[in-house]
Amino acid sequence: MRGLFITFEGIDGAGKSTHIEPMAAQLRAAGHAVHVTREPGGTPLAERLRELLLHEPMDALTEALLVFAARRDHVQQVIEPALARGDMVLCDRFTDATFAYQGAGRGFDREVLKTLESWVHAQLQPDLTFWFDLSAEQAAQRLAAARTPDRFEQQDTAFFQRVREGYRARAEAFPLRFVRIDASADRDAVGRQVFAALEDRRW
Picture 1 (tube, rainbow, N blue to C red):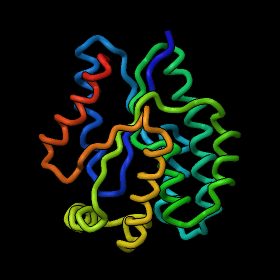
Picture 2 (cartoon, rainbow, N blue to C red; picture 1 turned 180 degrees about the horizontal axis):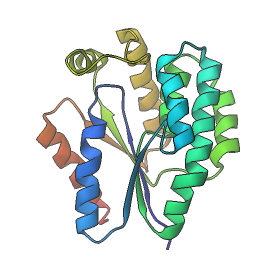
Picture 3 (cartoon, rainbow, N blue to C red; picture 1 turned 90 degrees about the vertical axis):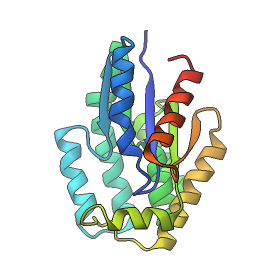
């Protein structure tokens, strides 16, 4: 039986990464084989491309090409083999992030992104996507206290407002797989929302 593919999405500072490992632990306790990964990244090649994306200046087209190059390797080397084994794959970001960041945030041509998506992973889409929704202002406050910002985290509030709207558009386009999580709540309350959504699907 093919495994399930669950993605965690949201603007920088929304807190999505915090909830991946607790979910993985609960799923493993329920008897599932679980693989946790991230994008950009997940393979040695993709992690090297991640460093370029986060720290080297480039235009939106170069960003998109690097993101999809990393994704191609990730899908081939990690995601598809894990799903074929019957594992549950939990991924910190996937293609929704590209449409939100490069598409909405950078204003890059969405038709080009759709073409790249079709080349790189054809029919592969998440079975479930948690969208950690948070205002750009709240996200900026969290990031300021967290760490030295990378090239994306250095963007202004208007950029993250556009990214948030990009995620909203994706959620409206794919309502059956998207679950909106109110990421403005405290950590425990956010966690309860995530696990409630998982329990609704009886996974």
